Length: 119
Image 1 (spheres, rainbow, N blue to C red):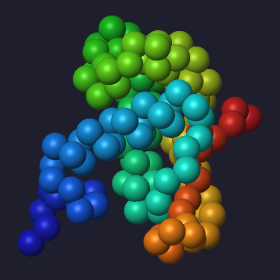
Image 2 (cartoon, rainbow, N blue to C red):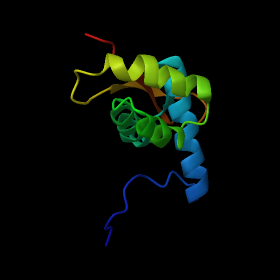
Image 3 (cartoon, helix red, strand yellow):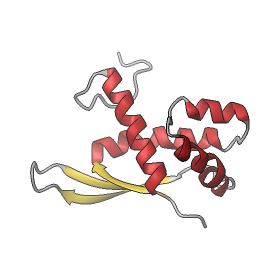
Image 4 (cartoon, helix red, strand yellow):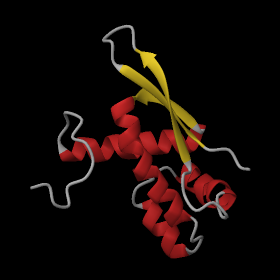
């Protein structure tokens, strides 16, 4: 039974998956969009959305909770000062996934995951 086991294995052990999620989340928050595989994008989407929801709190506790996952201080500052306040009135759905087709080398389905623009 799969109780309380969410997410995809992505052919990695647990520490490698955690490092992958953190590095992809940092890249996404730094650049606004990244190109990756569909499986990694679907795995990254709830991870980033929970980080943004936590950062919307804006207080020291929220900064420390998000700081556990985002180790780059510049990206953490950008998330807390710019990104989270821009999503203050949005109840969720901070990211969007576009399918791009297949990669030439190994025929893997690629995707573009990006932060939704302010409206």
